Length: 189
Image (cartoon, rainbow, N blue to C red; front, side, top):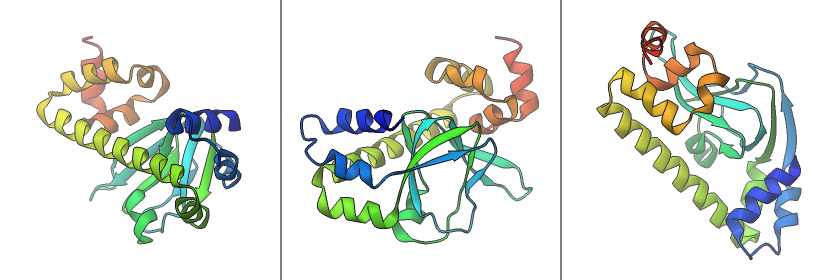
């Protein structure tokens, strides 16, 4: 599985891979069961994760303790609470495994060392930030303009694997609709 992390980094670095082994040496493997917390709201985020296998949910609780899912992160993608990780402040979000997951993670100390010593790693981090920002803005802007049915169609078109992989409750949370609405509308498709 570490080959997946290596290939992911090579794809982003192009021909500039002379320190890739140094970067990979700072990542550790973490195997988690389904529904295990990686980060709880209020904790300081200490790691950035690369998902080699499995699925993660990034979410918050509303005033009634209902989950609102900001993101669902699957294989070959990165996950962290970037504000907490960067500023070392308490997290506003939770991160949990949705499936049995195999993750590679780098802690803040290793991350800072790579940022200082390996200029190419800064490029990878910048790409992660840009992707995360663009994905969040796109999803927010798109969902504001779409009806519940259109959100389900958007998910089917843009992230089709999630429909068969995740529970209706989690998908509804990700789409910002009730589970009942999701079930009713899904039957119409």
